[in-house]
Every structure is written in structure tokens, then in C-alpha cells.
Amino acid sequence: MSEPTPQNYAKHARYVPMYHLVLAAILLANLGWSIRRVIKWPTVGDGMTLLLAFGLLIVFAYGRAFPITVQDRVIRLEERLRMERLLPADLKARIGEFTLDQIVALRFAGDEELPDLARKVLTEGITKRRDIKRLVKTWRRDDLRV
Image 1 (cartoon, one colour):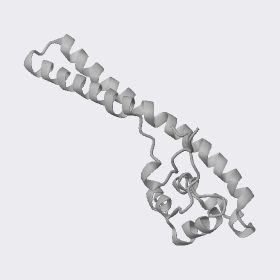
Image 2 (tube, helix red, strand yellow; image 1 turned 30 degrees about the vertical axis):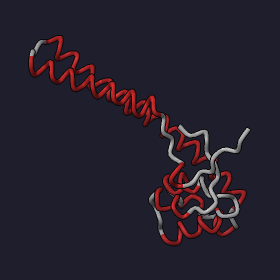
Image 3 (cartoon, one colour; image 1 turned 135 degrees about the vertical axis):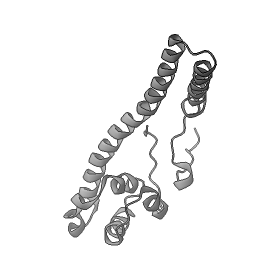
Image 4 (cartoon, rainbow, N blue to C red; image 1 turned 180 degrees about the horizontal axis):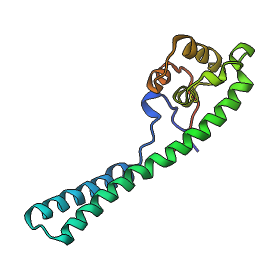
């Protein structure tokens, strides 16, 4: 079996074509059709269909947002345990200072790289996930993300 493709900043995002492309297109087409029907032939039934179309879009959005929130909480726990193991004593005392975004982004840093990158993130006040991820040189794969 071949080795998995290395992850990096450009290739780490999870993209599921059937969800992000096909289902999104179907739901948007349904919304457009529902809006058109309400405008051209307004009836109570078409109004309810329009409400359902909006409701399905809300389910689509939260169907992604809720699992990502849970995933971030698990990542926070895993990475705090990892930091306890890998960071020097002075940084261990500061683990509580990391924001969720910082922790989630730092998870991609390899074990050898984590202490220096964690110090840089705290010292320079780098808070955006994308900025931290761009600083990672040796990526740890994360294939179990939502």
C-alpha cells in the first residue's frame, strides 16, 4: 500500500465533494425554485415549501458546525495532554494561556517543532489559525478530522 500524501497548509482541509458540492447545490437549487414559485404563484403550500428550503439550509450549516465544535473540544484535550508531555517546564505553566484557535492550529506541528512554535505563538501573540498553520514546517497528519 502506498504512503499517504504528506499534509501541509495547502492540503490539510477536509473536503467532501458529495456534501460540500452536490448536497449544497441541491439545497440551493431547491431554495431558488421555492423562491421562484412563491414569487410567481404565491400559495400557502409554496410558502411552506420555501420555509422548508430555508430549514434544510440551516440543517446543512449546523450539520457541519456542531461536529466541528465537538472535534475542537477533543483536539483541545488531546493537545493539552500532548503539551504536558512535550513542552519545557516554563511553557507547561502557560498551557492555560493558549486559546482554542491556537491549540487547534498547533496540533499540526510535529513533536520536535511544537515547543519552539508554541513559545513563538505565545510570545508574539499569534492568534489566527491560518497564521499558525503557515508557520508549521513538519506537519503531523490528521486524517480523522470532520
